[in-house]
Amino acid sequence: MSGKIVTIERHILDKQRKFPQATGELTSLLYDLALAGKMIANETRRAGLTNILGKAGTTNVYGEQQQKLDMYADSIIFKLNDHTNRLCAMASEEHEDLLEIPAHYGKGNYVLLFDPLDGSSNIDVNVSVGTIFAIHRKITKGEKGTMSDVLQSGRNLVAAGYMIYGSSTMMVYTTGNGVSGFTLDPSIGEFLLSHDDIRIPEPPKFYSCNQGYEKQWTYGVRRYTKWLQGIDGEGHEPLSARYIGSMIADFHRNLLEGGVYYYPGDVNKPFGKIRLLMEAQALAFIAANAGGYASDGVGDILDVQPHRLHQRAPLFIGNKALVRQAEAFIRQHDQAWIEQYTPYREQTVIEA
Ligand code: AHM
Ligand code: MG
Image (tube, rainbow, N blue to C red; front, top):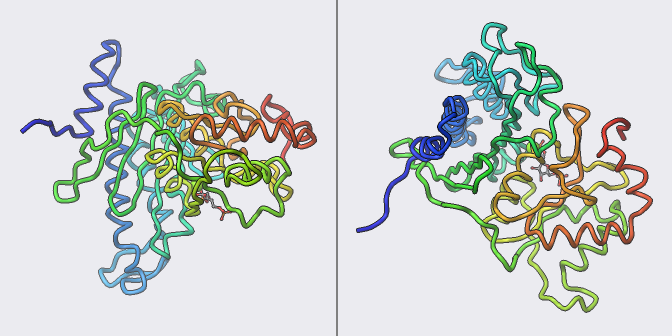
């Protein structure tokens, strides 16, 4: 019988061996994130029992204090990383400011940004949710990390990934050299390599967006959507619509099956909804490493220079040709939007 069993630990170590100068710090950081994923997955499985075992803020029948799942995920990731001395700064979608790493432990070489539970509004209806993470290297000279270490463009990422808590739990990550996917075997508590060198396939099958907002969209985005549907004699078969409303699940499906996810800027939300630092950069880095592409409708998301921790950016992500097509429609029809809102790419200005 052929085939070998590769645990995530072994895989990360093998990758590290190719870089003799590596200190093992990044390797350990990725281990810790995998462990966080296992712990969050375990709690996610019990999420539907809160009505029986106690709601958030109450004490359950075991005498344990109950937490909302997103708060639980947030605190687990923090607690597994705040005293390791691998990080100089940490930021979560759940907190307005940088997280406070105890002074003695905040002298590491890396910056961790995360969305602890993406799609968390779906927890109560049993839909897949996930954790998204992005890792930068410290760029300032001082001992402690600063906002400049955090506000880096996606081009500087050293690693990014996500855990998805669905019918099975998976961890997908890249260190800039291919994308690998691992499935958690719950009986042994190990992530095993299940998807080696993921490439986003052609032809794509799906488009994923919240079409309920069409009324608020720019004309270019509306035209693009009609193009995806193969309307107006576009000369290709329509793509199927799939929108879970949990980006990590929509992204994961499109990564494996081919497709595009978009959350554009619109009349009410000129920068869309997706957070540049905790969500968009990480997924853009993964997409790029799988042969795909991510744009804010004007250019590569990885080139956007962040100017604020919770900055949002329009996001189009998936197969390269599909995302390029979105840019073409926006360039053709939405010049006014581009002129008004895209100076944000260059730093300075604006919040809507
Ligand atoms: P969250 O990080 O607060 O969960 O918000 C992001 C989520 C995405 O996962 C999802 O695609 C989107 O918000 C859904 O928003 P909408 O209901 O506006 O379509
Ligand atoms: Mg999110």
